[in-house]
Image 1 (spheres, one colour):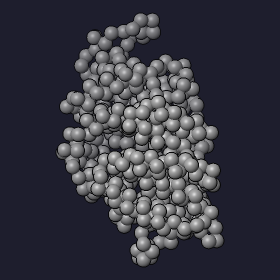
Image 2 (cartoon, one colour; image 1 turned 180 degrees about the horizontal axis):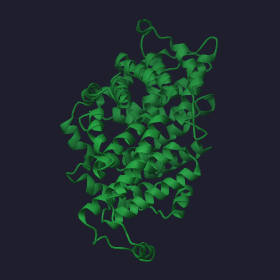
Image 3 (tube, helix red, strand yellow; image 1 turned 135 degrees about the horizontal axis):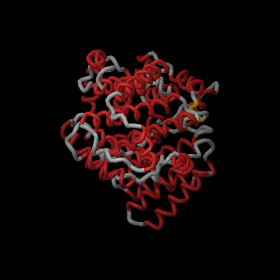
Length: 464
């Protein structure tokens, strides 16, 4: 598996998985990873059937309690000191399989019954870990970030969240030299750079995230090369390719290598089913950055691509995906008989996906983006979208100037956007986001009172 030979790994495990708890756990783990990657109903059903059999296999090696012991365990906490080594291993394998089954239970069906069933499986697994003295489990940390409504539901089945404890355990795991050290690192990175933004306050520990990445950056200094090697390493799980395509699309976009960025955006459109609306919009946005003669060489019709976006929008759990809603709104400019082109749409999406924070770490790439933005500013022409386009360009220009340390000029760009609030007709999101960026700029200058006021105003306006 670690060498990307998934079929070979399954072939090795298959003859033994109904007789050995280790082979059962390994076999089910690979199939669960595959199901999580593909989200295909067939793969989920296959993995679920295998996990049920794996649990039966593990159960055969667990200690069998007498009737008296079973009743006693309901009254008092039982010690596991009396377990033989093999029985302890069986407990761990059983707990791991339960976690996998819980994961697939959530994926398989979104209703409340599945939610409770999955929660009970996780709780049982967690209790097994605790009884064996294994506390390296990030569940309590993740739970602590969930909305209160969800937390109350989980508390009904015996869960509580302890963020500090979860983080400390993950740090201990990341500092170890075991097989799961890298998983602890990945979980911490995910927590600091993504989970806190989606479920928490947005205050992830970026200093810790950079420290965790440090050793890996030294070992793998060329990310693009590693992604390309990953693509070439295997062809069985195409979904891993899609993750690499996404990252390569952005890395080439950051350096404004638009043809290479288009290449990976096109592959995502053709192969991935995650979000066709986003992929098509992204491809059209990237092509919009190229000269007309270069676009013609690709054989693509940018206007038609933008017009496809709205019809590709999907819903998850009955709700629209925010980034898809954004892409649909922007692409509607092309529904008119005489479309008005979007200005720097790929750079706007770069901002939406927090790309300017990444680019801002390198002065040369930031300077290059600033040149593109200033050229666009000069080429703006009157239209019903002109105030919106002008404000977008000013906000992006302000971001580049801020990252280049030209703070006074950045402030002027941001205040120019805010002074144009009444003129904006379509892209109303620009005002709260500009308030937020201006707040961050004041924070950078040490003016925390002003920073707080602007960020609070941005939050209030965004909610409205």
